[in-house]
Image (tube, rainbow, N blue to C red; front, top):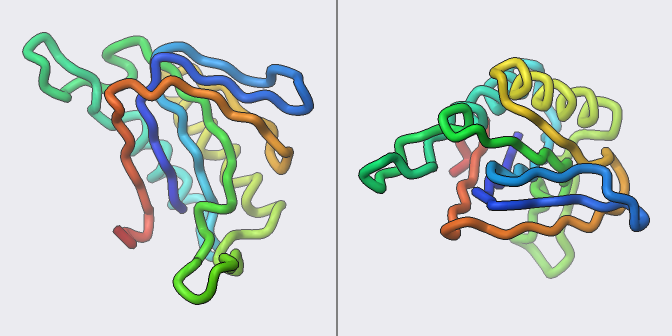
Length: 149
């Protein structure tokens, strides 16, 4: 499972012109589910997102997590994070999990973050979404449960 975590001052997602999710301070998390991912990967991703300490403390050091600052998460599914463009110019998405498995694990990540006491808004799984954000810092962190990077 892969994720791009962006620290934001605000983020939103629209589907067909309808606002389906929005947050203020927190994380926009784009998450892609890989073939072979399971509940353990989803739980590990949820724990990592909920506990990631990238907000400044009183001394200006990145020591605070979402719960410390009252932050929220906007979680958006994005299978293209599993795209492999090492050969040619057209990415291959064979590493991305198929719909039913991916949606189930995406929902498990959302539930895991909520279980940590963090407010979670979501996009609409499988929809063509328009995502807007104001990246704070900018701070962008890449996560991979398979430790590919």
